[in-house]
Amino acid sequence: NFMLTQPRSVSGSPGKTVDISCTRSSGSIARNYVQWYQQRPGGAPTLVIYEDNQRPSGVPDRFSGSIDSSSNSASLTISRLETEDEADYYCQSYGSDTLNWVFGGGTKLTV
Amino acid sequence: QVRLVESGGGVVQPGTSLTLSCAASGFSVTSIGIHWVRQAPGKGLEWVAILASDESSEFYADSVKGRFTLSRDISKNTLYLHMKILRNEDSAVYYCATIGGHWGQGTLVTVSS
Image 1 (cartoon, rainbow over the protein chains, first blue to last red):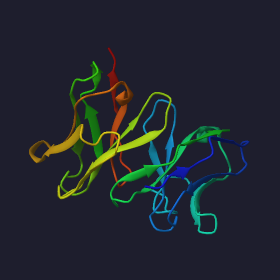
Image 2: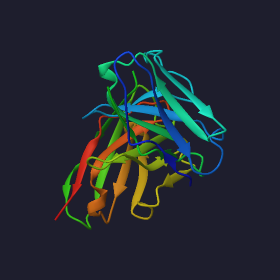
Image 3: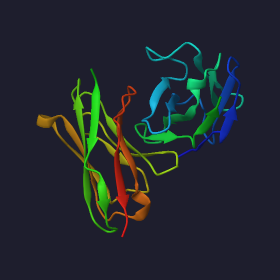
Image 4: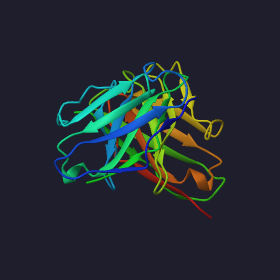
């Protein structure tokens, strides 16, 4: 299986934009869809992006996802930052068995 | 409304067994695969296992392979994670989750002597 590497932490001011990267160690990032989860302290993860760039209903359009084949990475972009966005964010893709999940190490966002 | 509720966690000694339950509502456990994911205290998410919707496939993380097994009871619409030979490093909050992004609230397993 490959690994997904995320920065340990990022920060941004309210109203600004931050990007969180997720780099795949081997194999193309485009080979398997990437999902992004938000986890607030004490809570379960919630899905904010699925299939690379799709937003579940109820997720603000301030959240967007993309993939970049040149850097073999996926990115979560959060614009117009709000204090409630402060949380841990995890990227997730699919492993060699197709059904198994691979998670990034998580990124702590401080607003 | 899709809902997942985990139960069965607790404090157990190393080397013992424990079974966790994931009760589903709002959908059938035969319609979609359900994953188990765990999170050790202060750590990140770790994928544990998945049972395919038709039970044709089940996959396990290397860290639990040979010790953890999955089963389900269709009549109860519930998935089970049977854990044996538990180790200190199995201590974590265990979540069940669907591919559609639905997660339960988790159940805490503490393995300690």
